[in-house]
Length: 158
Image 1: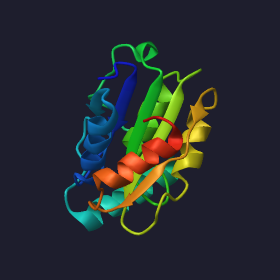
Image 2: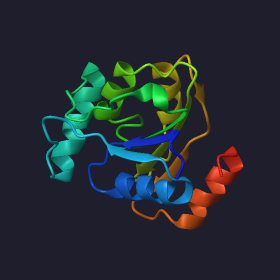
Image 3: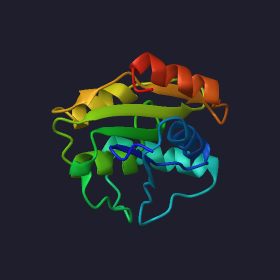
């Protein structure tokens, strides 16, 4: 197990969680799920509209999740659903509240048809002093070991 890798993710429906766990199985590391203090609604249409309002307003929800010492990690994988072509607000909160200077940051996402959207660009903007590698975008819950392994090999991580 690689103790220098942190895999942080927010998952609303479980798809991003599944992908994060596949990454952990391939490379090890510490898995950490971001949990907002106020849970998002489970109804799809309600959460879609709420996410739209929050993203447009630049809202950053308070998180229950804390990482004790981010400095102990060299590589940080950041997982998010694609919400309105960008990262989910809980992920934005996490990225804004941590110093990723000198770290390698690797975005990954799940989506319902929008692909990676602007997720990589959003991560680059919020992590300006880090190296951001090419991300992985997986449709829904279709993530497979082979896709994850191929992506990690291409990045030179595995």
